[in-house]
Amino acid sequence: MATGGVPANTMATGGVPANTCSQPFSQRVLGNMKMLFQEEQLSDVMLAAEGQSIACNKLLLSAASEFFRDRFVTNPDPENPSLLEIDDIDFDTLASVVSCVYSDHIDFTGVSVDKVVKLILAGVQLKIPELTEKCEKYLLGKVESDVQASIDVHRLAKADVLTELREKALGVMGESFQQVVASKAFMELSEDELLQYLQEDNLNVENENPVFAAVVAWVKHDEEARKPSFSRLAESVRLEHCSRPFLKTVVAKEPAARHCWSMSLSVMHRRKEKLDQQKEKTGRKQF
Image (cartoon, rainbow, N blue to C red; front, top):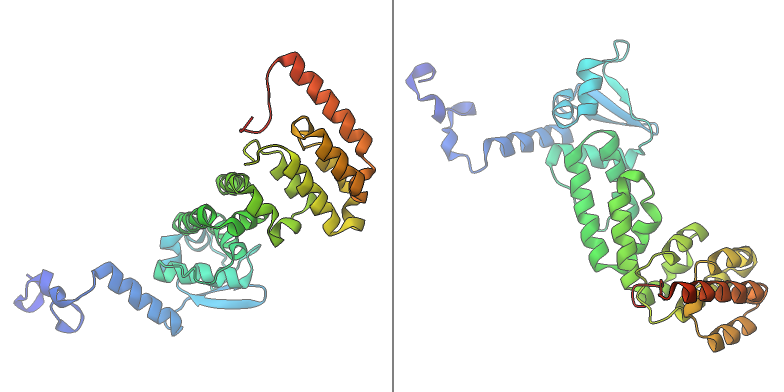
């Protein structure tokens, strides 16, 4: 029983019986906190980044994040307890993180891969595993269904915590080799990004002819700047699996490749001899 003889489990704010509420209690409370957040009511701390700030509640932030719990409870700043500067996170990302904390929801509509990667890294830094898991799940789905997204993830997911995503992206790129090299994003890969891709064992090609051609196309896209990169990239092409007529024809006609023709033949012969000695092939997965 509660005050006034009314059963405790039927009482709600304002005397309304609890069982008439259409939302679960926790969902209703979180929704009300979001409303108060949007109205900037009952805030007790400002989160700041890049010269901008957001009014928040220490209680909710601490409940959602070990990082904030440490800052507000274990090691508070006695000189400025109502302001917390967040380093290494841009303001837009911080605002999205706070929105997720107050709503338990992320709207990925129209959100770029770059922003989702930033949210993952922010989730790691601020110790909000639910945020990280939501974003990783979204990107894994995008990578599996969108070649462009897989290229973007390969380019942007550099941090160690994103290894699984990066490997998944490379796998999809390998299976979709023709689509990748035909895309605008392929031409925007850096030398190191392209080299990592070419070194994958799962490139879906019948032989190395299209791999070599892709290197030539990438170099020619910005020949003056990329010509010095050709030798390094050509080393990753498994030339023993290129046809000699193709190599001679392509290299003979491509100024970007002509300067390393001798290197190409030397590498091809050296690898061919090694394969003959081993009595086995060690090329891409299709060989």
